[in-house]
Image (cartoon, protein in one colour):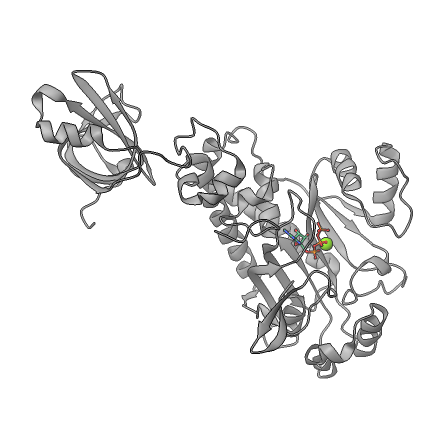
Length: 434
Ligand code: ATP
Ligand code: MG
Protein backbone atom coordinates (compact mmCIF):
# COMPACT_ATOMS: atom_id res chain seq x y z
CA UNK A 1 0.00 0.00 0.00
CA UNK A 2 1.96 2.93 -1.25
CA UNK A 3 -0.29 5.56 0.27
CA UNK A 4 -0.48 3.99 3.72
CA UNK A 5 0.39 6.13 6.73
CA UNK A 6 1.48 4.56 10.03
CA UNK A 7 -0.85 5.49 12.89
CA UNK A 8 2.05 7.12 14.74
CA UNK A 9 2.62 9.44 11.77
CA UNK A 10 -1.00 10.54 11.29
CA UNK A 11 -0.98 14.29 12.03
CA UNK A 12 -3.96 16.57 12.70
CA UNK A 13 -5.01 18.43 9.56
CA UNK A 14 -3.98 15.64 7.20
CA UNK A 15 -6.12 13.25 5.22
CA UNK A 16 -4.58 9.80 5.52
CA UNK A 17 -5.14 6.12 4.89
CA UNK A 18 -4.21 3.96 7.87
CA UNK A 19 -4.27 0.17 7.81
CA UNK A 20 -4.06 -2.41 10.54
CA UNK A 21 -6.07 -4.53 12.96
CA UNK A 22 -9.34 -3.77 14.73
CA UNK A 23 -8.20 -3.59 18.35
CA UNK A 24 -11.63 -2.90 19.74
CA UNK A 25 -14.92 -1.15 19.01
CA UNK A 26 -17.03 0.81 21.45
CA UNK A 27 -20.59 1.72 20.58
CA UNK A 28 -21.94 4.53 22.75
CA UNK A 29 -25.22 5.01 20.88
CA UNK A 30 -25.13 8.12 18.72
CA UNK A 31 -21.35 7.92 18.58
CA UNK A 32 -19.02 4.93 18.32
CA UNK A 33 -15.29 4.33 18.26
CA UNK A 34 -13.06 1.81 16.63
CA UNK A 35 -9.44 1.53 17.72
CA UNK A 36 -7.17 0.57 14.86
CA UNK A 37 -3.75 -0.87 15.71
CA UNK A 38 -0.63 -1.16 13.59
CA UNK A 39 3.01 -1.83 14.36
CA UNK A 40 3.60 1.77 15.46
CA UNK A 41 0.63 2.10 17.83
CA UNK A 42 -3.09 2.76 17.81
CA UNK A 43 -5.47 5.39 16.52
CA UNK A 44 -9.10 6.14 17.26
CA UNK A 45 -11.64 6.10 14.44
CA UNK A 46 -14.80 8.04 15.21
CA UNK A 47 -18.28 7.21 13.90
CA UNK A 48 -20.97 9.87 14.27
CA UNK A 49 -23.90 7.81 13.18
CA UNK A 50 -26.30 10.58 12.14
CA UNK A 51 -23.74 12.32 10.00
CA UNK A 52 -22.30 9.31 8.23
CA UNK A 53 -23.19 6.89 5.54
CA UNK A 54 -25.09 3.96 7.13
CA UNK A 55 -23.10 1.34 5.24
CA UNK A 56 -19.83 2.75 6.44
CA UNK A 57 -21.00 2.78 10.06
CA UNK A 58 -22.39 -0.73 9.76
CA UNK A 59 -19.19 -2.10 8.22
CA UNK A 60 -16.97 -0.38 10.77
CA UNK A 61 -18.91 -1.51 13.79
CA UNK A 62 -19.88 -4.94 12.47
CA UNK A 63 -16.36 -6.12 11.69
CA UNK A 64 -14.89 -8.68 14.08
CA UNK A 65 -12.03 -7.76 16.37
CA UNK A 66 -8.56 -8.42 14.87
CA UNK A 67 -9.81 -8.12 11.30
CA UNK A 68 -7.50 -6.20 8.98
CA UNK A 69 -9.00 -2.96 7.72
CA UNK A 70 -7.96 0.24 5.99
CA UNK A 71 -9.49 3.58 6.88
CA UNK A 72 -9.22 6.82 4.93
CA UNK A 73 -10.23 10.08 6.55
CA UNK A 74 -9.31 13.39 8.09
CA UNK A 75 -7.13 13.43 11.19
CA UNK A 76 -8.08 15.84 13.95
CA UNK A 77 -6.81 16.61 17.40
CA UNK A 78 -8.88 14.96 20.13
CA UNK A 79 -7.50 15.17 23.65
CA UNK A 80 -9.87 12.46 24.87
CA UNK A 81 -8.61 9.94 22.31
CA UNK A 82 -5.94 7.50 23.57
CA UNK A 83 -3.24 9.06 21.37
CA UNK A 84 -4.61 12.60 21.22
CA UNK A 85 -5.81 12.32 17.62
CA UNK A 86 -8.68 10.64 15.83
CA UNK A 87 -9.79 9.93 12.29
CA UNK A 88 -13.23 10.60 10.90
CA UNK A 89 -13.58 7.95 8.18
CA UNK A 90 -14.56 8.75 4.62
CA UNK A 91 -14.13 5.14 3.61
CA UNK A 92 -13.40 1.88 5.35
CA UNK A 93 -12.33 -1.37 3.68
CA UNK A 94 -12.32 -4.76 5.32
CA UNK A 95 -9.20 -6.34 3.87
CA UNK A 96 -9.13 -9.61 5.83
CA UNK A 97 -11.95 -10.53 8.16
CA UNK A 98 -10.99 -12.39 11.36
CA UNK A 99 -13.09 -15.18 12.85
CA UNK A 100 -15.42 -14.12 15.64
CA UNK A 101 -13.74 -16.65 17.96
CA UNK A 102 -10.01 -16.23 18.50
CA UNK A 103 -7.75 -18.77 20.23
CA UNK A 104 -6.04 -15.95 22.08
CA UNK A 105 -7.02 -12.43 23.07
CA UNK A 106 -4.45 -10.03 21.60
CA UNK A 107 -5.77 -7.17 23.70
CA UNK A 108 -4.34 -9.04 26.67
CA UNK A 109 -7.49 -8.66 28.73
CA UNK A 110 -7.75 -12.44 28.97
CA UNK A 111 -4.52 -14.15 30.04
CA UNK A 112 -3.33 -17.17 28.10
CA UNK A 113 -1.09 -20.09 29.03
CA UNK A 114 2.39 -20.04 27.49
CA UNK A 115 1.58 -23.12 25.39
CA UNK A 116 -1.52 -21.43 23.93
CA UNK A 117 0.55 -18.35 23.25
CA UNK A 118 3.25 -20.35 21.49
CA UNK A 119 0.68 -22.23 19.42
CA UNK A 120 -0.67 -18.87 18.26
CA UNK A 121 2.49 -16.78 18.13
CA UNK A 122 1.13 -14.52 15.39
CA UNK A 123 -1.71 -13.37 17.62
CA UNK A 124 0.53 -13.37 20.69
CA UNK A 125 2.93 -10.92 19.02
CA UNK A 126 0.12 -8.48 18.46
CA UNK A 127 0.47 -7.72 22.16
CA UNK A 128 2.74 -4.77 22.79
CA UNK A 129 4.67 -6.41 25.60
CA UNK A 130 5.35 -9.56 23.58
CA UNK A 131 6.33 -7.67 20.44
CA UNK A 132 8.65 -5.61 22.65
CA UNK A 133 10.67 -8.71 23.57
CA UNK A 134 11.45 -9.41 19.94
CA UNK A 135 12.22 -5.80 19.12
CA UNK A 136 14.67 -5.83 22.02
CA UNK A 137 16.06 -9.14 20.82
CA UNK A 138 16.75 -7.55 17.42
CA UNK A 139 18.42 -4.58 19.14
CA UNK A 140 20.59 -6.92 21.22
CA UNK A 141 21.74 -8.89 18.18
CA UNK A 142 22.50 -5.68 16.31
CA UNK A 143 24.49 -4.28 19.24
CA UNK A 144 26.44 -7.50 19.66
CA UNK A 145 27.23 -7.61 15.96
CA UNK A 146 28.37 -3.98 15.97
CA UNK A 147 30.59 -4.53 19.02
CA UNK A 148 32.28 -7.55 17.45
CA UNK A 149 32.85 -5.64 14.25
CA UNK A 150 34.27 -2.72 16.21
CA UNK A 151 36.66 -5.26 17.75
CA UNK A 152 37.71 -6.25 14.19
CA UNK A 153 36.05 -9.68 14.22
CA UNK A 154 34.68 -11.04 10.93
CA UNK A 155 31.21 -12.56 10.92
CA UNK A 156 31.16 -16.16 9.74
CA UNK A 157 28.58 -18.88 9.14
CA UNK A 158 29.53 -22.50 9.78
CA UNK A 159 27.72 -25.75 8.92
CA UNK A 160 24.85 -26.93 11.05
CA UNK A 161 24.88 -30.42 9.55
CA UNK A 162 27.98 -32.25 10.72
CA UNK A 163 29.54 -35.69 10.75
CA UNK A 164 30.63 -35.63 14.40
CA UNK A 165 29.68 -33.78 17.57
CA UNK A 166 31.85 -31.58 19.70
CA UNK A 167 30.94 -32.40 23.21
CA UNK A 168 30.33 -36.14 23.13
CA UNK A 169 27.43 -38.08 21.73
CA UNK A 170 24.54 -37.84 24.16
CA UNK A 171 23.27 -34.40 23.28
CA UNK A 172 23.38 -34.87 19.52
CA UNK A 173 20.37 -35.00 17.22
CA UNK A 174 21.04 -37.63 14.55
CA UNK A 175 19.71 -37.08 11.04
CA UNK A 176 19.92 -39.02 7.80
CA UNK A 177 22.21 -37.45 5.26
CA UNK A 178 21.88 -39.20 1.89
CA UNK A 179 21.67 -42.55 3.64
CA UNK A 180 24.50 -41.81 6.06
CA UNK A 181 24.20 -40.82 9.71
CA UNK A 182 24.89 -37.16 10.39
CA UNK A 183 24.07 -34.77 13.22
CA UNK A 184 22.74 -31.29 13.88
CA UNK A 185 25.66 -29.28 15.22
CA UNK A 186 25.78 -28.58 18.98
CA UNK A 187 28.21 -25.72 18.67
CA UNK A 188 30.37 -23.96 16.07
CA UNK A 189 33.30 -24.59 18.44
CA UNK A 190 35.58 -26.56 16.14
CA UNK A 191 34.84 -24.55 13.01
CA UNK A 192 35.40 -21.20 14.66
CA UNK A 193 38.69 -22.49 16.05
CA UNK A 194 39.75 -23.58 12.58
CA UNK A 195 39.16 -20.00 11.42
CA UNK A 196 41.61 -18.47 13.90
CA UNK A 197 44.29 -20.36 12.01
CA UNK A 198 42.99 -18.96 8.73
CA UNK A 199 43.65 -15.53 7.33
CA UNK A 200 40.67 -14.21 9.26
CA UNK A 201 42.24 -14.67 12.73
CA UNK A 202 39.29 -13.21 14.66
CA UNK A 203 35.71 -14.32 14.00
CA UNK A 204 32.22 -14.34 15.40
CA UNK A 205 29.03 -16.18 14.57
CA UNK A 206 25.43 -15.73 15.61
CA UNK A 207 23.61 -18.92 14.74
CA UNK A 208 21.58 -21.90 15.88
CA UNK A 209 22.91 -24.70 18.05
CA UNK A 210 21.04 -27.96 18.52
CA UNK A 211 21.11 -29.91 21.76
CA UNK A 212 19.13 -33.02 22.47
CA UNK A 213 18.97 -32.17 26.16
CA UNK A 214 16.62 -34.56 27.87
CA UNK A 215 15.59 -32.14 30.58
CA UNK A 216 12.74 -29.75 30.16
CA UNK A 217 13.81 -26.67 32.11
CA UNK A 218 12.87 -22.98 31.95
CA UNK A 219 16.39 -22.18 30.67
CA UNK A 220 17.12 -24.89 28.11
CA UNK A 221 16.01 -25.10 24.51
CA UNK A 222 16.69 -27.84 22.01
CA UNK A 223 17.42 -25.21 19.38
CA UNK A 224 19.12 -22.09 20.74
CA UNK A 225 20.97 -19.10 19.34
CA UNK A 226 24.63 -19.07 20.18
CA UNK A 227 26.73 -15.91 20.03
CA UNK A 228 30.24 -17.21 19.43
CA UNK A 229 33.59 -15.46 19.36
CA UNK A 230 37.08 -16.77 18.75
CA UNK A 231 40.36 -14.95 18.22
CA UNK A 232 43.95 -15.78 17.48
CA UNK A 233 46.70 -14.39 19.73
CA UNK A 234 44.55 -13.69 22.78
CA UNK A 235 44.37 -15.53 26.07
CA UNK A 236 41.34 -16.37 28.21
CA UNK A 237 41.54 -13.11 30.18
CA UNK A 238 41.31 -11.12 26.96
CA UNK A 239 38.39 -13.29 25.83
CA UNK A 240 36.71 -12.38 29.13
CA UNK A 241 37.25 -8.70 28.36
CA UNK A 242 35.52 -9.14 24.99
CA UNK A 243 32.70 -11.10 26.57
CA UNK A 244 32.10 -8.39 29.13
CA UNK A 245 32.22 -5.64 26.49
CA UNK A 246 29.70 -7.45 24.31
CA UNK A 247 27.20 -8.01 27.13
CA UNK A 248 27.52 -4.39 28.26
CA UNK A 249 27.07 -3.16 24.69
CA UNK A 250 23.82 -5.13 24.44
CA UNK A 251 22.45 -3.61 27.64
CA UNK A 252 23.55 -0.10 26.67
CA UNK A 253 21.90 -0.33 23.25
CA UNK A 254 18.64 -1.47 24.80
CA UNK A 255 18.78 1.30 27.38
CA UNK A 256 19.42 3.85 24.67
CA UNK A 257 17.13 2.66 21.89
CA UNK A 258 14.35 0.63 23.47
CA UNK A 259 12.71 2.83 26.11
CA UNK A 260 9.27 2.32 24.54
CA UNK A 261 9.69 -1.43 24.59
CA UNK A 262 10.94 -1.37 28.18
CA UNK A 263 7.87 0.63 29.10
CA UNK A 264 5.63 -1.92 27.40
CA UNK A 265 7.33 -4.55 29.55
CA UNK A 266 7.01 -2.40 32.66
CA UNK A 267 10.79 -2.36 33.06
CA UNK A 268 11.61 1.24 32.18
CA UNK A 269 12.24 2.31 35.79
CA UNK A 270 14.36 -0.61 36.91
CA UNK A 271 16.37 -1.34 33.74
CA UNK A 272 20.07 -0.61 34.19
CA UNK A 273 23.06 -1.37 32.04
CA UNK A 274 25.72 -3.05 34.21
CA UNK A 275 28.50 -0.70 35.29
CA UNK A 276 32.01 -1.38 36.48
CA UNK A 277 34.04 -4.52 35.91
CA UNK A 278 32.35 -7.89 36.37
CA UNK A 279 33.96 -9.57 39.41
CA UNK A 280 36.21 -12.52 38.50
CA UNK A 281 36.00 -15.34 41.06
CA UNK A 282 38.03 -18.50 40.91
CA UNK A 283 36.18 -21.80 41.01
CA UNK A 284 37.73 -22.39 44.44
CA UNK A 285 36.34 -19.09 45.76
CA UNK A 286 33.01 -19.88 44.13
CA UNK A 287 32.55 -23.21 45.91
CA UNK A 288 33.69 -21.70 49.21
CA UNK A 289 31.17 -18.90 48.88
CA UNK A 290 28.41 -21.30 47.93
CA UNK A 291 29.23 -23.52 50.90
CA UNK A 292 29.29 -20.48 53.18
CA UNK A 293 25.73 -19.55 52.21
CA UNK A 294 24.58 -22.80 53.81
CA UNK A 295 21.89 -23.10 51.15
CA UNK A 296 23.00 -26.46 49.80
CA UNK A 297 22.19 -29.73 51.54
CA UNK A 298 25.65 -31.05 50.81
CA UNK A 299 28.88 -29.09 50.82
CA UNK A 300 30.57 -28.83 47.44
CA UNK A 301 34.02 -30.28 47.06
CA UNK A 302 36.77 -29.61 44.56
CA UNK A 303 35.87 -31.20 41.21
CA UNK A 304 32.10 -30.89 41.56
CA UNK A 305 30.23 -29.12 38.79
CA UNK A 306 28.17 -26.28 40.20
CA UNK A 307 24.59 -27.44 40.70
CA UNK A 308 21.76 -25.10 39.71
CA UNK A 309 20.96 -24.28 43.37
CA UNK A 310 24.65 -23.52 43.87
CA UNK A 311 24.67 -21.08 40.97
CA UNK A 312 21.57 -19.47 42.40
CA UNK A 313 23.01 -19.11 45.92
CA UNK A 314 26.24 -17.65 44.58
CA UNK A 315 24.38 -15.32 42.23
CA UNK A 316 22.36 -13.91 45.12
CA UNK A 317 25.57 -13.47 47.07
CA UNK A 318 27.43 -11.68 44.26
CA UNK A 319 24.39 -9.73 43.02
CA UNK A 320 25.73 -8.78 39.58
CA UNK A 321 27.25 -10.37 36.48
CA UNK A 322 30.46 -12.22 37.34
CA UNK A 323 33.00 -14.68 35.98
CA UNK A 324 34.09 -18.00 37.39
CA UNK A 325 37.66 -18.85 36.38
CA UNK A 326 40.26 -21.53 37.12
CA UNK A 327 37.95 -24.52 36.85
CA UNK A 328 39.32 -27.98 37.48
CA UNK A 329 40.63 -29.19 34.13
CA UNK A 330 38.72 -32.45 34.45
CA UNK A 331 35.28 -30.81 34.22
CA UNK A 332 36.02 -28.61 31.22
CA UNK A 333 35.99 -29.89 27.61
CA UNK A 334 39.11 -31.31 25.94
CA UNK A 335 39.64 -28.32 23.66
CA UNK A 336 40.19 -25.97 26.64
CA UNK A 337 43.81 -25.41 27.52
CA UNK A 338 45.15 -26.22 30.98
CA UNK A 339 46.76 -23.49 32.99
CA UNK A 340 50.48 -23.31 32.19
CA UNK A 341 51.44 -23.07 35.87
CA UNK A 342 49.10 -25.71 37.21
CA UNK A 343 47.82 -28.53 35.01
CA UNK A 344 44.94 -29.34 37.34
CA UNK A 345 43.47 -25.92 36.55
CA UNK A 346 41.82 -25.00 33.30
CA UNK A 347 41.80 -21.67 31.49
CA UNK A 348 38.08 -22.19 30.99
CA UNK A 349 35.71 -19.58 32.36
CA UNK A 350 31.99 -19.13 32.75
CA UNK A 351 30.23 -15.78 32.77
CA UNK A 352 27.24 -15.71 35.00
CA UNK A 353 24.13 -13.63 35.44
CA UNK A 354 23.08 -13.76 39.11
CA UNK A 355 20.42 -16.27 38.10
CA UNK A 356 22.21 -18.54 35.61
CA UNK A 357 25.16 -19.28 33.34
CA UNK A 358 25.32 -17.14 30.20
CA UNK A 359 28.71 -17.95 28.75
CA UNK A 360 31.39 -20.61 28.63
CA UNK A 361 34.77 -19.82 27.20
CA UNK A 362 38.48 -20.25 27.59
CA UNK A 363 41.84 -20.42 25.99
CA UNK A 364 42.09 -23.34 23.60
CA UNK A 365 44.64 -26.09 23.32
CA UNK A 366 46.57 -25.22 20.18
CA UNK A 367 49.45 -27.69 20.56
CA UNK A 368 48.82 -30.75 18.39
CA UNK A 369 50.12 -33.43 20.76
CA UNK A 370 48.25 -32.07 23.76
CA UNK A 371 45.11 -31.84 21.70
CA UNK A 372 45.26 -35.50 20.67
CA UNK A 373 45.86 -36.52 24.30
CA UNK A 374 42.88 -34.42 25.32
CA UNK A 375 40.62 -36.21 22.83
CA UNK A 376 41.73 -39.58 24.14
CA UNK A 377 41.27 -38.56 27.78
CA UNK A 378 37.74 -37.44 26.98
CA UNK A 379 37.05 -40.86 25.43
CA UNK A 380 36.74 -39.40 21.92
CA UNK A 381 38.36 -40.88 18.84
CA UNK A 382 40.80 -38.29 17.44
CA UNK A 383 40.52 -39.89 13.98
CA UNK A 384 36.87 -38.87 13.78
CA UNK A 385 38.02 -35.27 14.17
CA UNK A 386 40.93 -35.42 11.77
CA UNK A 387 39.53 -32.56 9.66
CA UNK A 388 40.03 -30.45 12.77
CA UNK A 389 43.16 -31.85 14.39
CA UNK A 390 45.26 -31.89 11.23
CA UNK A 391 45.02 -28.12 10.86
CA UNK A 392 46.88 -27.91 14.16
CA UNK A 393 49.89 -29.32 12.32
CA UNK A 394 49.98 -26.47 9.83
CA UNK A 395 50.42 -23.41 12.04
CA UNK A 396 47.67 -22.86 14.60
CA UNK A 397 48.21 -19.78 16.77
CA UNK A 398 47.30 -19.61 20.47
CA UNK A 399 43.68 -18.55 20.70
CA UNK A 400 40.69 -18.07 22.97
CA UNK A 401 36.99 -17.42 22.71
CA UNK A 402 33.55 -18.03 24.14
CA UNK A 403 29.95 -18.99 23.44
CA UNK A 404 27.17 -16.78 24.81
CA UNK A 405 23.59 -18.04 24.89
CA UNK A 406 21.52 -15.46 22.98
CA UNK A 407 18.19 -16.37 24.55
CA UNK A 408 19.67 -16.52 28.03
CA UNK A 409 21.05 -13.03 27.55
CA UNK A 410 17.60 -11.72 26.62
CA UNK A 411 15.82 -13.77 29.26
CA UNK A 412 18.03 -12.49 32.07
CA UNK A 413 18.08 -8.94 30.73
CA UNK A 414 14.27 -8.77 30.76
CA UNK A 415 13.66 -11.02 33.75
CA UNK A 416 11.60 -13.48 31.69
CA UNK A 417 10.46 -16.50 33.65
CA UNK A 418 10.93 -18.93 30.78
CA UNK A 419 13.52 -18.97 28.01
CA UNK A 420 10.77 -19.90 25.53
CA UNK A 421 9.46 -16.35 25.81
CA UNK A 422 12.62 -15.13 24.10
CA UNK A 423 12.14 -17.38 21.06
CA UNK A 424 9.48 -16.98 18.40
CA UNK A 425 8.98 -20.69 17.81
CA UNK A 426 10.80 -22.62 20.53
CA UNK A 427 11.91 -26.22 20.12
CA UNK A 428 11.66 -28.37 23.22
CA UNK A 429 10.70 -31.93 24.21
CA UNK A 430 7.03 -31.31 23.46
CA UNK A 431 7.24 -28.72 20.76
CA UNK A 432 8.15 -29.29 17.13
CA UNK A 433 5.39 -27.20 15.57
CA UNK A 434 4.80 -24.37 14.88
P1 ATP B 1 24.15 -25.44 31.03
O1 ATP B 1 25.14 -26.10 31.94
O2 ATP B 1 23.52 -24.23 31.62
O3 ATP B 1 23.17 -26.41 30.45
P2 ATP B 1 26.25 -25.66 29.13
O4 ATP B 1 27.43 -25.43 29.98
O5 ATP B 1 25.86 -27.03 28.75
O6 ATP B 1 24.98 -24.91 29.76
P3 ATP B 1 27.74 -24.55 26.97
O7 ATP B 1 28.06 -25.74 26.17
O8 ATP B 1 28.75 -24.00 27.88
O9 ATP B 1 26.39 -24.83 27.78
O10 ATP B 1 27.18 -23.42 25.95
C1 ATP B 1 27.51 -22.04 26.04
C2 ATP B 1 26.29 -21.21 26.36
O11 ATP B 1 25.22 -21.49 25.45
C3 ATP B 1 25.69 -21.50 27.73
O12 ATP B 1 26.35 -20.77 28.73
C4 ATP B 1 24.27 -21.03 27.55
O13 ATP B 1 24.15 -19.64 27.67
C5 ATP B 1 23.97 -21.41 26.10
N1 ATP B 1 23.28 -22.69 26.03
C6 ATP B 1 23.83 -23.92 26.04
N2 ATP B 1 22.92 -24.88 25.95
C7 ATP B 1 21.73 -24.25 25.86
C8 ATP B 1 20.40 -24.72 25.72
N3 ATP B 1 20.09 -26.00 25.66
N4 ATP B 1 19.41 -23.78 25.66
C9 ATP B 1 19.70 -22.47 25.71
N5 ATP B 1 20.94 -21.98 25.83
C10 ATP B 1 21.95 -22.86 25.90
MG1 MG C 1 28.92 -24.08 29.92
